[in-house]
Image 1 (tube, rainbow, N blue to C red):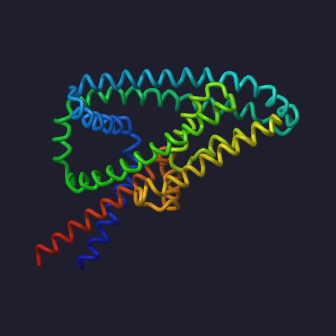
Image 2 (cartoon, helix red, strand yellow):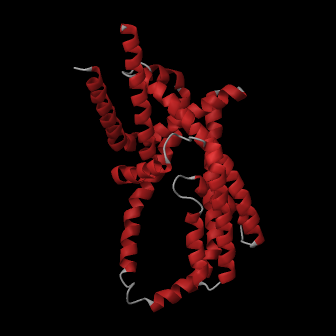
Image 3 (cartoon, rainbow, N blue to C red):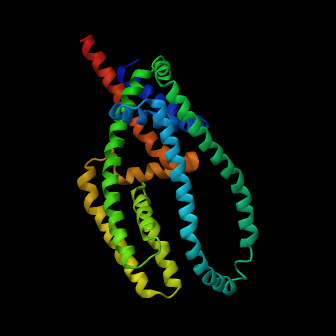
Amino acid sequence: MKLQTKIYFQKTGILLAVYLVLRFLLPLVLPFFLAWVTVGSLVFVRNRVRIRLIPLSILYILLFLLLFGTSVFCGCLLLYEPCCRLLPVCQSYWEQFSVYLAWLPGSLSGHLADLMPSTLSCMFGIFLYLISVLLFARDWEHFHMLLYKLPFAEPVSNAGRRLLQCVKNWIHAQFRIMIVVSLECVAGYGLLRIPGFLFWAVLTGIIDALPVFGTGTVFFPWIVIVLLQERYTFAMWLGLLYLITWLTRELMEPKLLGDGIGLLPVCFLMSVIAGLKLFGPLGFFSGPFGILFIRELWLELETSFSQKNNLDL
């Protein structure tokens, strides 16, 4: 078999293996995978602050629970007043279009019933994640020794390190852009006298940092709701604030990211759409991750064949 043909067959095998892992294995082991990534990050912190891994993991879990509880409480508190103000508006439109929207109550109740098992599954997944963080922290060294005994551990590890460096650069750039966008929203929301403007500004910055979403995910529905309330001046100021945040990202992103994670924006969007189609909601992240991981494994394969060919010569 020719060398080039052999490489094509192995690349096809890598493509199929990554698909099967993301499609069938990752949903089953997701809490454990996230716990492994978390403890790996805590190991990096431990080497800087000189704290034992288990106490550091316990501190992380307590901080996670505190932030999670605070976010849920603040979200419910801040959403209460806007929901109360929107209720009369929604009721008015409901009465106007009641004939066309008569099917909604039954449909919504069905969707709510379907969401209950998913919510319980999500809560159980969070519980598994937190327990797994402690278990990985306890046996971190032994677990890594087992990993390196697996077949193909070295090429996968090399590809994973390069991928991790790309992701680190991307996260660092997104964090800086998120800070600037959040500060702009703090100033804008504060001038518009929006209740809880600090929380909403930070939330807008976080949503803007997510792939594909952007600040339009926040501003477009908000502007539509404000227009329905006939608050045209307020909608104009929101539109201006959206334009400022959009221009900020467009100007800062090319400079900070450079080549970024090595995918063209259109390819990144295609990987997200393909991931959603193939893997469901999890594909929003596993789609781009899978494409990048396949690319790094192919590069590792080509490097290995190139080195072997040089040795034969």
